Length: 173
Image (tube, rainbow, N blue to C red):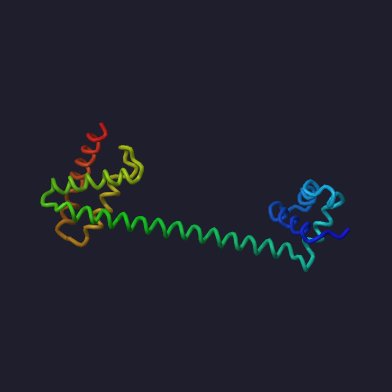
């Protein structure tokens, strides 16, 4: 029996999901009970190997395009994450410059405020989701432009971590 194109195209869509001739034929009989009541797995197999229909080639092309779309989506997501991190870095640098730190205590207070802001940005509700030491290391990297400030922060890192943890602990109750 000759089947119209829309029947064979629907069968290809099913085959693309199952790659089983028998399952494809069974589903087609359910979807089109009148038109496909005599459709067998052998008929589906013939369609699959027919040079004009080229199901195996089409299926491979579909899979390649799906992989390419998935790869592009991953790349776009990572690029967006990097862009968000750059905005966050710039915001942190802006906040740090605005603090006008003149002493170690002033630096600790500025860092505490920045880390509290980071905690809020990461959905914190008072619980740090970002490791304080990692945040401090990122901030130190931002300070690379000012050697004196960077050296002071590296030297006083344990003190700063302890003070920030104390302040966050006090703020969280």
